[in-house]
Image (tube, rainbow, N blue to C red; front, side, top):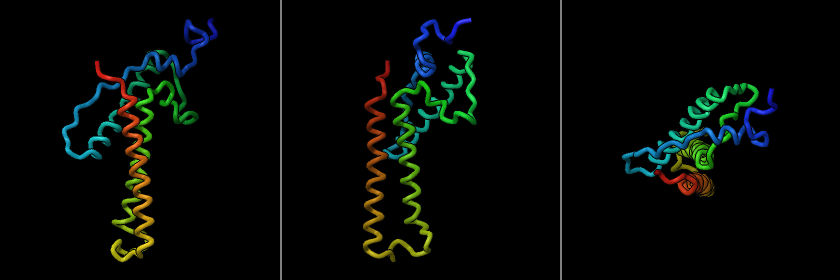
Length: 147
């Protein structure tokens, strides 16, 4: 019985999975909003990463315990998929932060916030928005061209 899943014993499980993975064909999203388009594309990439990992896992006869390795789908992921997932994390933080303006925990409407509180809120929103934009741009750069 061989010591490895591969005929190339120096190959790691992540490399073996990446060799079998296929990138998601770029979807065509018809929307004017940059944010909505970025959310749709990044969500589609992350969903594809999950489905394609399960396909490869089944094809190679591998089995990962999702309880012990909840991030196993990151094995063999493409760089653009990592950036898409990171963009969704930044977006989650951004949306949570924006919800503070609409429904503040203190019950004080945004227009009644002190000037320093509003400045702090806008500064943090700018940082979160730039993090989201940076990951979307990195996704676009890392995305392989369509054939």
